[in-house]
Length: 255
Image 1: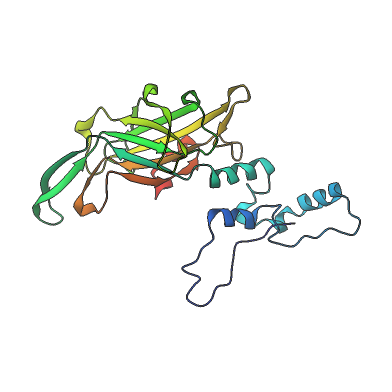
Image 2: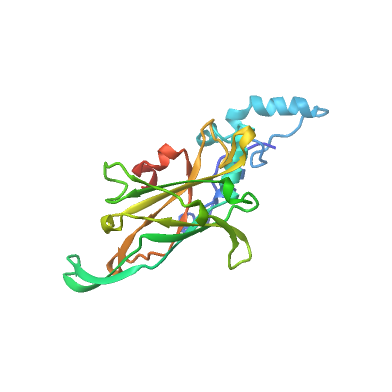
């Protein structure tokens, strides 16, 4: 048992195309992985071996992961990040289509699509059972997250939160986002979606689990208006990010 650094040898011209998945990276750097040999001594007791593993943490865990994967609770949190919920789907409801002038192509025949309402779906494997578990935060940035402006907090209608089944037969969490200030929506507008699940209120346990002692949410952002010139769609399938809420609200996190 032991751990090691990510770094594989590939044939010439292949290394730039082949990268480790998130799970491969995890298991190659987790303190208790077998990526780097750390054999038992003859007649060594398990307790003695465990103490020796912990004493050699710096050698067995890549420096980039020393603060997380060497600690059992943090390592468990990182593993759950990699497998429980990886993406969120946003489907526009009653999107508005209109023609407008776009200076980028000097044309007045460009189609613009705007939506102030979205149906959201995300899968939590076995973690989601009841709408009361859901702690959701929504923030509307009329001119984009990179502007130094205070976002508008969007209330979440708990009546729209329910458990359903997706096309693959998997149980998913579904809810509705509604932006009341549709007159503020423009091509820069973005919404930050952040959510976590209450697993055990008595123990203050949530998913995502704490990492480095910090409470976290999983988040994604979406566009509210697109044009054909932007080569984007209002129906968006976004990879999630796991971080404390304050960090998710920082534009740099999404760059």
